[in-house]
Amino acid sequence: MKISQKILLLFLSFLSLHVQASEVMTIEKLKTEAFSRCQTSFQRPFTISIPFLDPSAAGGIESVGMTYQEELAVKSKNLLDQNDFYISPRPRAAVNTLPMDVFVDNENSGVYLKMTWEDALFDYSSSVIQPPIDKNLIPAEGRVMTEVIIGHRSPKGDYPQLFDLRSSAYVRFAGYPPQVTGASLRLGSHHIFGQDAQEDFPIVRSVYLSAADSTKARAFIIVESDLFCGAVKMEMNHKDTSAEVVMDTFWYTREDFIWKKDSHTGLVAYSSMFWRNEVNTASISGEAHDSDTMTLRYKNGLEEKFPLQPPVSGLRIRDLTEHTFGPEEWILSNEDRDPTHYADFYPALRETNYDKRASYNVKILESNIKTGVSLYEMAADGEYGDNIVAVSTIRQDIKKANNADESVHFKYKTTAFYPEN
Image (cartoon, rainbow, N blue to C red; front, side):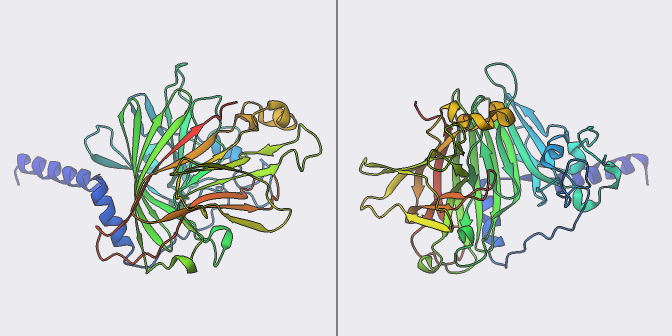
């Protein structure tokens, strides 16, 4: 074989590998994949134990296993730096264990290159991580990405984190500081708080990321659970005093869905924490909550407010859509922003204290099915566990689709903001 032929074959081989590692993605292609996934049973990822990466059984920062603080100490290379946006990955560490495939379009060409754990150049050398972790000893099951953080240049010239997308289908976001993340956006919900059956948490299988311009980042996402599969187009916009996400979602069920037998199911939910307010705190400075009020706005212009007050024990579920007119928008807010009410927590939380926690609204833009709104309030068991869920619940039966065009379409806009004082 001539040298020129060998060079050509090597080039073709390289080109083939490059094509295999990249993918053209559109929402129509994503819908086809979501529909295809729902033709088979749900396969939840099985994660093997990796003691030095998983949460410590003994507790304490120097014990084997990773704490939240140690997880944050792992550094990485940005997967994208474009149009004033950056995308930073997070590895398997502490409670983040589920892998997800991450693709990035650095050229805004519609072609997404698959990124790997090696591409991220994760650095575990921080002195915060004790005992130290030898990166070379991490097995294949630990060489995965579980989360992506998206930030943007602020008016001050720094680059704060704005959006956080996890493989567990949690999205946490807030506007520029001093706004701080409060409640967590959930990409779908099923058997909320274990109603009717074990809670069916959705997961993110893959995410395709780009920054279209200096005002908007985009993600295409495959979401999956035991009940449904979803194709999600997510547009993230930064604002001067808020942050905004537009979700265009298309859903398929694995079987015919009967809503009256499976009523604790929704296409968008927020989970939040409510521990103490002025009713159940020993002092005026001891309140602790990410949210304190639920508000509904109906299509006829009517607005109703529902102060949060979880029961002392058990779970209370409130159907908030018994009104004749359907809901147009709902809001989970933290309206008490008086810093003196949270003073007990300031020494530990400082600039992330509860008075800085953002509020969130959900405005329904399009839907081809009937939905309602429900509020779930569970007795609090401490400061950190989410015990509040607000959700747009499905209120009609859904037949299993025969093709990708027979999707449930639900589009909404959600904004992180500060309520007016």
